[in-house]
Length: 79
Length: 498
Image (spheres, rainbow over the protein chains, first blue to last red):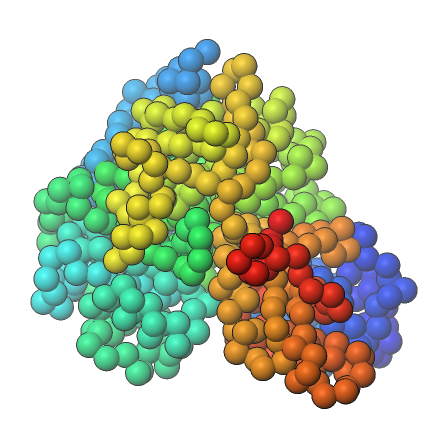
C-alpha cells in the first residue's frame, strides 16, 4: 500500500462522509477542519470507515490537521 | 386527544401502571432496587450487574463518600468517561445527600481548576487517566473514581427541594453557567423520559453514548433507562462502542442528530446490520433533527421520536412520538407541566424547572418571567393539535450537532486579546452543505503596517488555528472570513449580530 492508494481510498470515504464535498478539491495539504469541514463527529465516522477499509486502528487520543497526516498515520498503522 | 392522555396512553398500559413519579434520587435508587431487583441494569460487555447488584454498589459508594467527612449538601464532582464508576457515582452522590456535578471528559486542566473554584467543589472523583490534570487542585479532596467501601449504607433522606446536581449550560446569554437542579426537578425530568411508545419496562438495551455531563445523556438516557428497568451499556470510548454495535445489539438509542448522522452514514456504507439488527427506537433531540434522518431511519423500520428541552427544564420539556406525520415539530409539552406562549416565546412551569444558576442571581432573574415561569428563549408556534414548532430563538446560542450549546461570546473572547483583531463575530455558517461554526474577523489594519491582504488573511487563519487548539474539538471554528469592511453596528457601536 502506498500513500497514493491510501489517499484515493480516503477520498472515497470523504465523499461518503461529506457528500457535498468536491473530491477534486481534496489534496494532501487540505486541512480537515478549516478546508473540508471535518468536525469531531465527522472524524469519528471517517475513522470508523478507514479502520474497516484499511484494516487498522486509530489510537483514541490521536489528532490530525491535514489529509496527508491521516494518510501517513494509516500507512504506518496498516503496515 | 388531550396532553395527559397523549403521553399516558403512549406507554403500554401494563407498564404505565407500574410507573409513578418519585420525587428524590434517594427514593428512586431504593425503588429500582426493589422493583427491578434481578433484572440486568448495567454492563460493560465483560460483566453485567443486576439492579440489586448495582444498587448495592451504589450503597457501598455512599459509604465511601461519607468517610470523606464532607458537610451534607457539599458539591462533589466526577471527572470520568461514561463508565460504570461514573454512573454509580452520580446515583451515590445524589442519594447520599450531596450535590453532584459531572465534568465533561474533555475538560482541560485549567478548566478543571476553574470549575472546582467556581462551583465550590469539595471532592472530585477522578478517572486514573485524568489524574495528572488534577494535581494543582487546592482545597479539593481528589479521590479515584473506582473508590468503594466494603459495606454499604442506606440512602439519605433528602428534601425534594434540595439541590441534587449542577449542570453546565450556555444558558440564555454569555459565559457557561451552572444550572442547579433540585431532586424534584431532576426526578420530574427523569419521569418524563419514561414516555415512549409501547412496552417500556425491561425490553431495551441502551448505550450511554452521550456525555453524562449533558442533561440529555444523563436524564433522558441513563435515568430514563433505569426508571424503566432496562439495561445500560457503558461507553468509555465512543468510536470503539459504535464499532461494537453489532455485538451490543441496542434496541434503543438516545442520541443527538450528529450521532444519528454518523449511524446513517455507517448504514449507507456497511448496511443496516451494522447497527446490530435489533434497533427499534431512536430518541433524538438537543439539536435540530433534520427530517431526512427521520426518513432514513423510518425506512429501516426504526421508530423515530424526538423532543425538546433545555438544561433549565431538566432536559425534557416536550416530545414528539409522531415524527413521521409531523417531522418538524418538537412535539407536545409533557404532562403535569404548564406552558404558555408569550409574545411568541415558550414559557413553561412545573416540577422540572431548575432552581437557578449557581451564584448568579442576575442571570437567574433573567431566566424567569413573572410568577416563576421559565423563559425558554425559543420562539414557537402551536398547531391545532397542540404540537409545537420552533420558529426562532431569542437567546444568542449556537446549538452544535452534538447537542451542546455554545455562546458565541465565549468563543469570541480570546480573539480580543490579540492586538491585530479589531472585532469578531462567531456564528453558525454553511460549509459543504452542512452547518459549522464560523468566524468573521475585522483586522486592526494599522497593526499590520502595510502588509499585503494575503498576509493579513494568513495571520488570521493562523490565529484561529492557535485558538482552536485550546478549545474542545466540538467547539472549534471551521470557517474563517476576514472582513475588509466594518461590521454593521448597533447604536452603542457594538457588532450587530442580526
